[in-house]
Image (cartoon, rainbow, N blue to C red; front, side, top):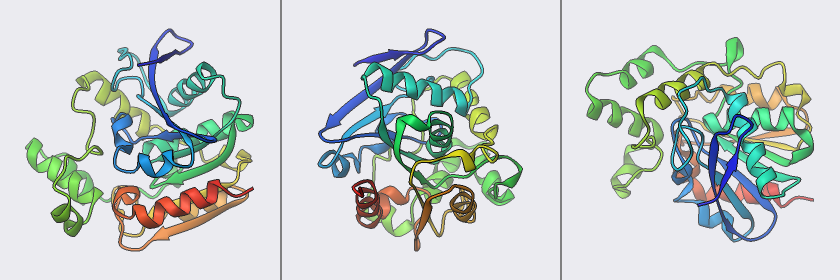
Length: 259
């Protein structure tokens, strides 16, 4: 598996498939490239897709240092440099959407078009998940905590039709220090002041029933980022890109195909 080397020497694994204009797909917190497995083929028919194992996940190095969404964005740029890609479309979901905000704000010349899915601007302006949701994820019983996360990702009906495996519930091989570093990185994100500087055409996608990253964050992003539009997916939860992939995938592909 190929690796890019970050400025601090950390090796960042990446994966490439498909053909066409380059499309960078960024996963959620404490997840690796398998986050995209169920839907990647939809994009591979139109784009050369590039996924990344964040530092701390997958086949990337897992240094015991502080992580941040800015640092993850810099790692992503190292991957594009390793592939000799001047520009790419960028589609980030959940924490990946937070990373994508920094990629677009800090490196505008590298981003052709931007999609931000089930994410938020972070900081004091973001709409945070409820106490009940936080409590459900913090249960001491790991099975109950995992089940709570599963139901935040998908509706019960979809779970019943799709028994797994589920690739959106976290990288099972992450060491404890990396899980904590990812949590702190996502919680510490605040791109509010940088959002107006994003110049790439932007599509904001969000499920209306998302309680993990509440849907009220979507209009905040769409109103703050110039040249942006928003599409809400009725009844979808956090993993809208899987459960509502027929609509969401078509919308993303259509948006990225615009001249």
